Amino acid sequence: MGNERIEMNKSIIETKKGPQPKGQYSQIVVGGSFVFLSGQLPFAPDGKLADGDIKAQTKQILKNIKNMLEEAGSSLTKVVRMGVYISDIDDFEAMNEIYSEFFPEHPPARTTLVVSRFPPGVKIEIDTIALL
Image 1 (tube, one colour):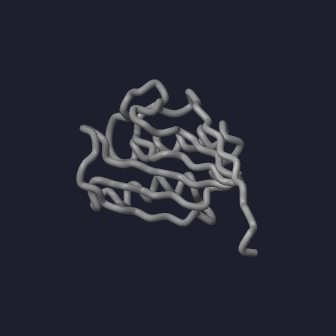
Image 2: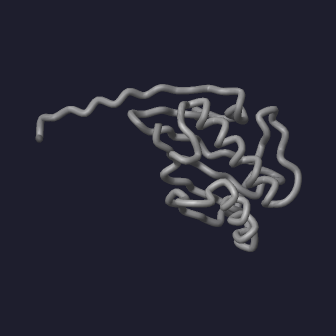
């Protein structure tokens, strides 16, 4: 037991099916049997910010996540954990309404936090861990 070595392969996936990174991070990392998506802001793959309220922004992010997971060989049904970061606790119910459309049964484990600063116009960010 003490001398066992677990080796985990790691690969980076870049895709046009989600917003392009604007910093020093990878869009998608596959490690072993898991897929990790960096936090997604409500930008369309072409870089345009989703107009409107928390519902429109949540929907854009979850569409991006769906497409990015599929690009990595996974899917929304294989999501095991999500972190949701919102700028206003009063948006929780509206965000959860859209979230429930994408995860109608057996939703993943989730943490939802209120954060104080996002880029201008951004109301939400979501990160994801899924199985391959």
